[in-house]
Image (cartoon, rainbow over all chains, first blue to last red; front, side):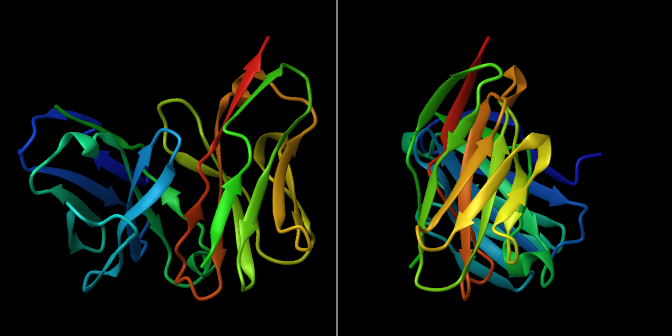
Length: 116
Length: 114
């Protein structure tokens, strides 16, 4: 089984709808991240969480919110989706201490979101 | 603040030819450097990393990269590519004090042709 899973893998929605993307991990890592990927722009950090009670905004948090329900679960919400939020979204995890001190992250397979 | 520049957005190459994907970074503090690969319709996976020590780092699938502090570069190389190396490659940096957060370059699409 995959260590980092994302649901759904694909989603088409309409402008103004609320949508939630979910991420679960079995790696036992404390840190979790949400990125979006756009062609030619690479990955940009939306939110990150160092533990259940520690949530931080990333580079492009406007229009998004997150919830860290448990160590293993980190969800991303779009309260009112707009077309320029059409992108590929990735969840990632890293270990507190150890590898995370060096920045190594482990990625899920991605969710392709289309907002019409 | 740290930044990463991948100098080529696309690199076409023929099978069995050598390839170099270029990455330059900007940072006022010591850095850790990474290359990730994204195969079509997949997430990112770590190819190799430089933390300290030898400036020549070897990764998976025959790739290697060399850390050059004076030129602030971390170029990725492979002496002979395969069709299966077709993917997008991302350089990333994590500087001291960045809380473990990675800054990614915009990616280089490697296209290997037969």
